[in-house]
Image (cartoon, rainbow, N blue to C red; front, top):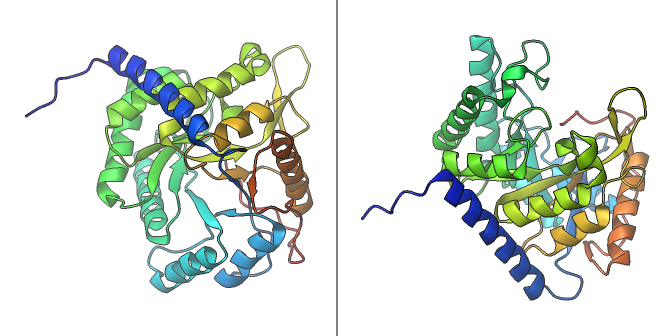
Length: 335
């Protein structure tokens, strides 16, 4: 028997209510301090050995990691990475596939779709929580850049079609596919993401949360606590991985927000961490866009100290710091 159709407005309203109810239930059910939060960062290790990479994360105090570089055809390395990180109790948070799924060039767009599809297959094979990319952009010059048509029905429909194609091609058993929200391309708000979830209509389509990416106006900058709460109220059931960074306002004759190290900007990390810890299974919180192991360690210390002041718990109990195994190179950029 076919279920009755639900119009979009009804879906958005009921989804938001369900999200609030689930978040409230999680907070009520959570023990004192909520569930432990897993913090992660890129690896600055002079090795490609899976066991050494996993040990580096644990020694540095991290319990989540970006997936190391692996070819989907390298089944031995896939098994070795999954085994090594599981042994050290380090969760593989995400496989990043940062390319333009809506590139105006047909050949590039087709190649990028194949790249992201391969990324989801890899995430599923290695046991990562998700494969993530942005929905794309019609900008012909900058793969993540702004374009006036990024907020049109044509963009929305194309993003939905791509998500369905990626998920249907892989049919993942455990990993999810997610779009990272952006300020100048859909999905740019919690409500828009809810629309996409309904339109894609696949259990393997999930949410990647980066609240700083949603701050695209002075109102959102000053009211980022409200923005955070809206994200968790509406999207909690689908969040699989999160990014940790911060924003500062560079005062000039037009609006200019700049990414900075967590703790040196204005994002309400108290609310961010409290809402994460209240989830039934807090998604990994991955620090990004910093310059080296020491900056990442400073960001991690701020996040942990902020959370512990609220009575929250982290995996592990120690404060993350730098490992003895470091590299001067910066990790690959993610959005």
